[in-house]
Amino acid sequence: MCARIKSIKNFCLHCSAEAFFRLSIQEFMEEMNTNYLEICREEPSDLQQQAWIDSFHILQEYLSPLQEYPIHMIFEYVLPHEGGRRPDLLLVSDKEVLVIEFKEKATFHQADVDQVSAYARDLRHYHYESRNRKVTPYLVPTKTRGKSGLYGDVIAISPDLLLEGIQKFCHNADSHDSKQWINSKYEPLPSIVEAAKMIYTNKHLPTIHRANSSGLPEALRKLQNIAESTEATNKKALVLVTGVPGAGKTLLGLQYVYESSLQDHKSEGVFLSGNGPLVQVLQDALESKAFIQPLRNFISYYGSKNSLIPQQRILVFDEAQRAWDREQVRKKHCHDFSEPELLVQVADRIKGWTVVLGLVGEGQEIYVGEEAGIGQWMEAISKSESEWDVYVPSKLANTFEEYKGAVMYSDVLNLSITLRSHIAEDVSQWASELLEGSTDLAKELLAQIYEQHFNIYVTRDLEKAKRYVQNRYYEDLSKRYGLIASSQSKMLPRFGVDTSFRGTTSVNIAKWFNDDVRSEHSGCRLSKVATEFSCQGLELDFPIVCWGEDLVWNKGKWIFSNNNNSRLRNPNLLRINSYRVLLTRGRDGMIIYVPSHQALDETYELLKRIGVREL
Image 1 (cartoon, rainbow, N blue to C red):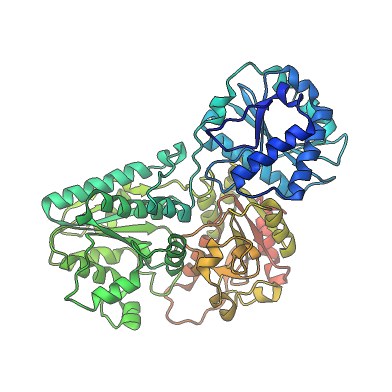
Image 2 (cartoon, rainbow, N blue to C red; image 1 turned 180 degrees about the vertical axis):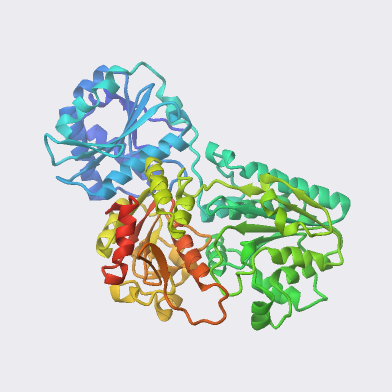
């Protein structure tokens, strides 16, 4: 009988190849059903059971010679912390892992290829015992015969050729203890919502090699040291942390606030964000407003009431470069100060030491009043009557060169590597080069991105894009996808993407991001649209980026739609940054939907010319 490891319920069946081929169909199904119920807390569907029966018969018919080799078979292995994602079958030897996904089809879709490729990618990067093993993905359309092909790193092969296709894997296998592989650490990078849940419920945050190498732990230690030094000297400190989109700035801020509060209740912190949707999504996910608050509510309450002093000593401001300038605050709050000035004034009223941490994103100013930039922070502390020490990365030296107080530079405070995109370090840079018109550089970067298994597609068929994400994440309720688009496009509603004011304001953005496809409010239903304002600072596994006529490629340069809003200092910058936000939301990849309209023909051709693959 196959071995069942009682201490770990992360598979439906685990046994040697020799033991598997001695099983009857009744024994196989009993093991699969029993463990599935324990793992998933529900009965398997009739469709799922039929798929198991079909795969059992295929394996018995075509792969019986496997029993001669020291190979272990793991059915429905649950990738830890991944919301229930399960490859159909893993063949594990001492040197290799084969990821096999069966599809009861005579043909298959790109989504099927990408699904099994993603399984293999995640095992390579996050599964400790697979780090020195070769991991190869196989897609097996069970209703084909005599066919095979290579699609990227995925070998698509019919059942009758599968044994021949894995001969080398079999012959290279030596005896090994498969329990060590089964019990291996598996530490994926969490999404910002998942990370906040872990922090709030006092659970361990994954510290994968990738996250460690990004500089997050060093930055957190630096912030903790600054807080200790500031407390010891009874001063006030302004700290700015810079980083590319997806580098983990928000995660760093959340963890800093939480751990500071754990270490010393007197140094309780608060995470403030001007990003309303981010606050809504996190508060909804946590079912709490304890340490995440809207910046404008905080400033409106404390900034207008000079007698009130917040209990927190650590004030974290997310997206500090997007702080409102004096003119915008005057219009919205009737104060004659910028947001940095108001926050510094509040900090000045806190007796003793205080740390104000600003998390600075790059190139994401998308609202009116956000164009003034981080220079406002230097002006704010210069006007303060308190003694402020400044801690910033060296790239901000010019901003603070005229400041009279102490300025300490540390590049630990600059997070230069994106974590969001599953090893695709170049996605943010690719978006920047594309939007700056550097098409040759964008093409070079895109080739590297594909090598890192980050999928980017372009299509003029919205229904095809929708089918892709639905097929790719079929029955995977942990995954999030949806339509995102520029708020300034007037054309998109004609093509089924409702960017109208009524359409976008009717979206419950917390439910749009947090609910799965079963909820009518979920973005996974692919009916309601999130704009750049709604998705900044958040992420999706696979967004469908809907391109509008507000930014089009024409005769070798980007052309912007006319915007008569006199309040905008630089409307073109805000358009570019809006698309920069849209193009950097994905974790697994993205589809760029370009409507079939003459105005967008050159944009579509540009994307294809630089190498974006057609869906």
